[in-house]
Image (cartoon, rainbow, N blue to C red; front, side, top):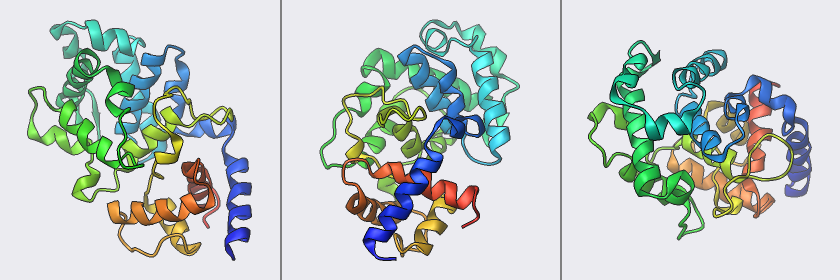
Length: 253
């Protein structure tokens, strides 16, 4: 396909998958249960954090996280007592365990108390990319006391990670195309600076379409994919995540 045909093909797939029907099988359904901005932010962040593995299990465990916080995530983060964290003791999602969950609650409280909240900590962009912001966010998030093991649950693009889950979370919060899937509740971050969440599905499809040549799914591959997607749509490149993901997961492209 030439560039024009490729754009037409992917734009058609975006329209196919970027609609409310997508929500019912995706972890983004968890933050869609809420209406208050901070609840959406926190529910989205925690759901994205555990978004690896079986999607049904992700949704089930993210829902359990909300239940353990009384389905009021922001209020719980800001006003919980230490003994209330004991209810997390049985929680586990793959390698994300109760210790990690408790640390994340403390880290979120720190972000809202000292760094103007989740939007505030991501809102300064210097290089038309969010990758340095993600790295800076991780440093600020872990200014609290924590075990080293918990740091692995937030990836750092500056250490050559694709940071798939945090890039997905940023797409959820920033994109605002009125399609009913992404929230678009962060007005201080431009969708032009977002990076496509790169995983095995989107990576394989991108390679078949000639959008990606690098074999590893790492930060260098994200940069290459960013560059090519921004040619197709410089203002909203991550809309193509719907196309790449949908082609890979739903169509076996």
